[in-house]
Image 1 (tube, rainbow, N blue to C red):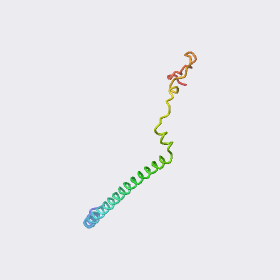
Image 2 (cartoon, rainbow, N blue to C red):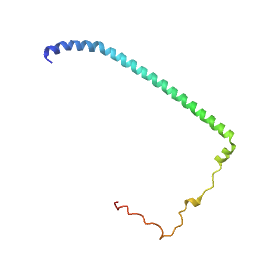
Image 3 (cartoon, one colour):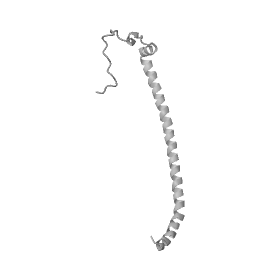
Image 4 (tube, rainbow, N blue to C red):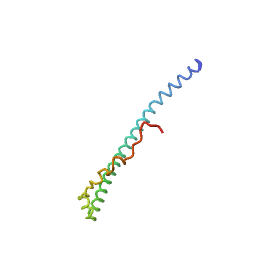
Length: 106
């Protein structure tokens, strides 16, 4: 680029910036207003859908508990504890297999 070309481009860029800057400001202003409205609509939809889902779940739970009285009894009664499952099996000390050496490379 030589000096003559720069001298012709400076007024063109100045005119574009002068008239383009307000247009860009209006565009950005409208864009963010639109995005704000979209967020408000989205938050309202989420709020109402969450409340509707919660009410449906509560209705289903009440219907299930009303239809099955045995289920209510099962929920209140706990199963008997099986303590024999928590004990280690009875084995002889000599019959237990030796654990492999963790430092040994295969």
